[in-house]
Length: 130
Image 1 (tube, one colour):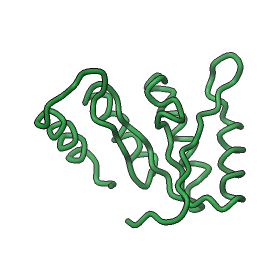
Image 2 (cartoon, helix red, strand yellow):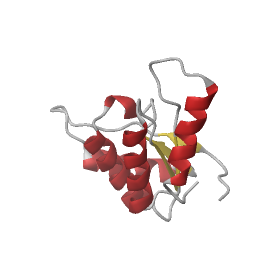
Image 3 (tube, rainbow, N blue to C red):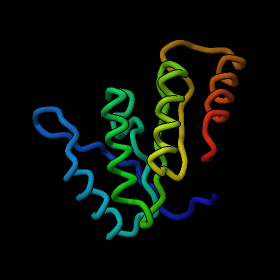
């Protein structure tokens, strides 16, 4: 898969009472499509990914794929502080139809090269999307 053009980091819309704002996700994706964006980067730090619960991240991923599929590429950020959560999010991203996943290494502690390598190796072995 080759990604080209504008890949926009997408904010994650929430209601004033802290719920995922489904209409906001739809509206935002429509706006981005109409304005020439070729892909969205969902649940990254700009989109509050690391601050959200697993269920919130999954819901944003589902809505993003639902509304963007066939119109633009969808890359879902699955990084977290542990491999099990990242694998769960990666499998979910693949299951809902994301075009690709992205991840940071586990954060908070400083890791040597081997644990970071093992983290990414474990992650890519669990999904077939880039």
